[in-house]
Image (cartoon, rainbow, N blue to C red; front, side, top):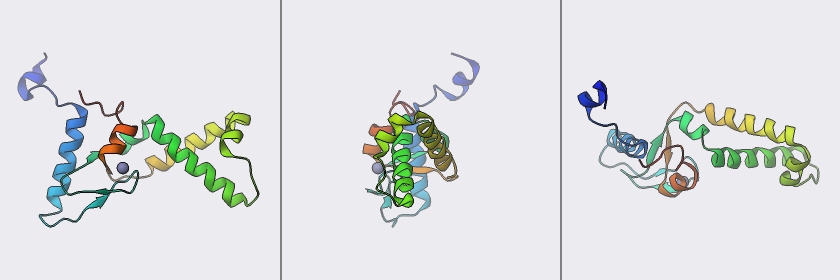
Length: 134
Ligand SMILES: [Zn+2]
């Protein structure tokens, strides 16, 4: 154990820190705060619940980048207006295009400068590895 951990005690696990940031964020909203929406799935998050993640942490989740990539690919297909290939088929045929979509998805995530409020189930689904419990 180094000097800093002797000063401040062992660092809290990232998951606990994210929960604490969410609690502080809720405190700032006051006693009568109404539920907020999860920034990932738009489900309701009750006051004092959820996790607050940094944009960098969100962008590190491979599975969430995949979700945003799928949305982007669907937007592209529908804006093209044609019958279009299923995006999964297109990804298989054009891996370079799939990479470009992932880059765009990461850029879209990183364009959000405010912290992300994340519900329990999105936390387990997408951020277990990025924000481990210990
Ligand atoms: Zn959610």
